[in-house]
Image (cartoon, rainbow, N blue to C red):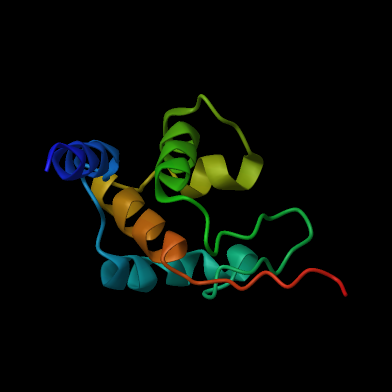
Length: 105
């Protein structure tokens, strides 16, 4: 019983406080698709893949682009008009894309 309670407390503490809406994130991701792809797979050599990234990392990165602590010519402009909800929704969408890793054989 104590182990179960401890596990539940750990899971609750690690869950995102303001989890976004992946469906709304998909709609917002249309403006990201030229570089990152609607499927989260980069279309440009200098743009990272976003599919399957960890949600808190995506929130942190987008927030930092928006507030100027992280800089990139394109992303700094693209993130300027994102609300906190937009950022949470985009992070929920891209982090929810399942990717399969197949090591070279």
